[in-house]
Length: 178
Image 1 (tube, helix red, strand yellow):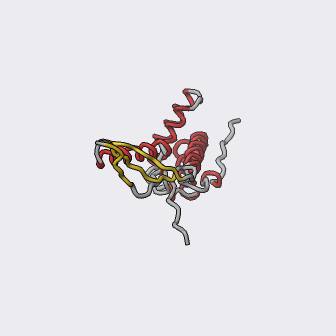
Image 2 (cartoon, helix red, strand yellow; image 1 turned 180 degrees about the vertical axis):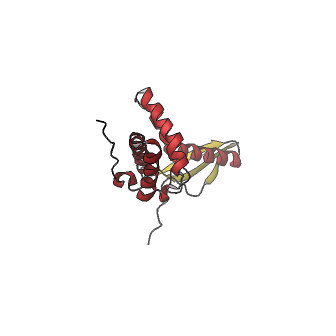
Image 3 (cartoon, one colour; image 1 turned 90 degrees about the vertical axis):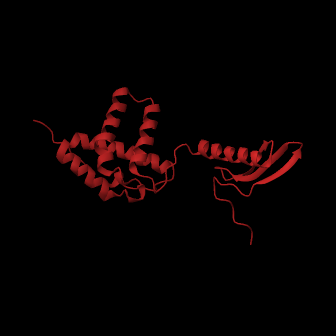
């Protein structure tokens, strides 16, 4: 039986070798985010300096590959902050960006912001939307549903969620004026 593969985004044992006077090479295997194992090498004036340089490079490598660190244990408030950054960088109209930010700050974060993503379910989202309909009307609830769907879509893209609970929430009907 062979050695189990490194988990994605982790590195193996660090080896340090003296390659010249006051020149040390630290190297390790790193399993990149495409699944490929690569060697990462850094140099330093001493063994410890080379190892520090290598560890700093590994931190930078992980941060660059996963700038938004969302997991099933992340809170909805963390997801909303990351989603708002993504929205701000998009080409949406300024008024749309402002509306989305208002919905997040006034309704989503106070309503479900402290739930973990693994706890965000159809009943939780449905309950939030029903409260918004009662207090602020169906149009605002529809906006909140759209924002929640976009946020959960981002969580799904980052592997933190597997399904979008807003998709299965009861429909919100707006009463027509006569």
